[in-house]
Length: 130
Image 1: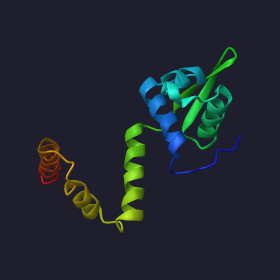
Image 2: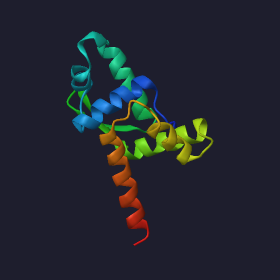
Image 3: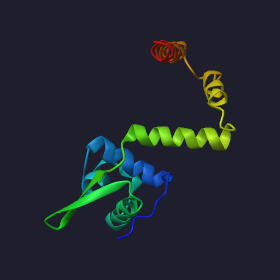
C-alpha cells in the first residue's frame, strides 16, 4: 500500500498518537482503553483512524494472531518540532521570537514557568557559544 505523506495530524489523529506514544505500541483496544470514558468511540472507528495513521506514515503495524499492533514510526519530539515550525510559519510570519513573545506575555504563565524558560534559553546560549 502506498503511503500518503501528510506533515501534520488532525485533532483526532493527534489524540490517538498521544496514546500510542504513551503506550509505546498497542492494539485498537489498547488505545480505546486509554481514551476518556465519555469518548464513546466505536471499535471500527478507532481501527479506521489507526489505519489512516499507518497510510499517512505516522505508525507501522505488525500482526499478532488476528490483531494488529500499532507502533509509532514518528517520535513525539520530532512531531512537536514539526508542529511548532508550521505554527511559526503560518501564524507568526516565520518569526520564532514573535511566537515566544506571545507565550511569555501570557498572563497565565507563572513566574516558575518563566524562570524555566529563562534557564532553557541561558543553557542554549551557553552551549552554542562554547
